[in-house]
Amino acid sequence: MSTRIDARFAELKKQGRSAFITFLMAGDPDPSTSLEIIKALPKAGADIIEIGMPFTDPMADGPAIQAAGLRALKAGMSLKKTLAMVREFRNQDATTPIVLMGYYNPIYIHGVDKFLLDANSAGVDGLIIVDLPPEEDNELCLPAMKAGLNFIRLATPTTDDKRLTAVLANTSGFVYYVSITGITGSASADTAEVGEAVARIKRHTNLPVCVGFGIRTPAAARAIAQSADGAVVGTALVDALRGSLDSEGRATAKTVDAVADLVSSLAQGVRGAKQAAE
Image 1 (spheres, rainbow, N blue to C red):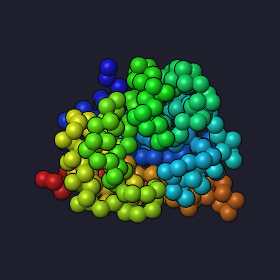
Image 2: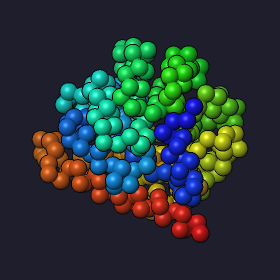
Image 3: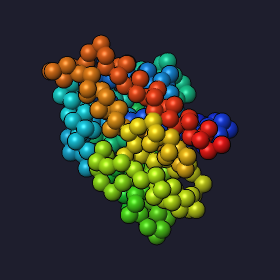
Image 4: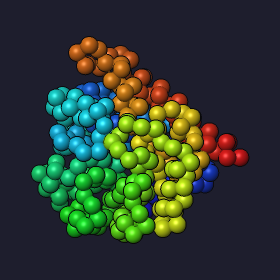
């Protein structure tokens, strides 16, 4: 089985560069603006798009992403509407991989079988479910893989070699390395430490290793992309979105461009890693 994620990494490998992966919360600041932003991402330079599924009780999300989730929920966003947004995106883009990131509770309430059917039909390619460890693979991971979706697992600075074996057992698509110990947006990634961690993970798997948390600038994205197969940026994009809103937290004429312009700048940083390596 080959997914859009597999195809994208194969294509990038031929080009000799790393992936730029963007994260934004579905429905932030409202469903229609959120869709316009998502539609603008590939042209701005996103190779893979992660979309957060808004949830009231997140664990790994820092204040900026928590606030984005609350804005989305206040605007009426739901899991069903998130899937509808992906379906709408697919009407104009059949190739950019979409990964849904979030927590198990909304999926459990939706119903696992129904969720996988709906996600597949909407055009979702992969899942990152933060609160489902390998011990719970029967809940969603194995059914998702059977349904043709990649199940992407997180590894962290505290994941030792023994635990890494369990983490990688049913992982597909790519491995998401969390570069810091803590929540999103709380610190900057240490490039040297990340390089060592990526090298260690690669000794255990042939999957691409992408790095997220703590990447905010084109220079940081370029530095990470020199050792990793992909750089993931979320909080910086959410902050740019928030900074474009009016005093009532509503979208303005600047909102879509504020995110797209930063994506373009960060994407150039990632693409610059190839030249830097040469």
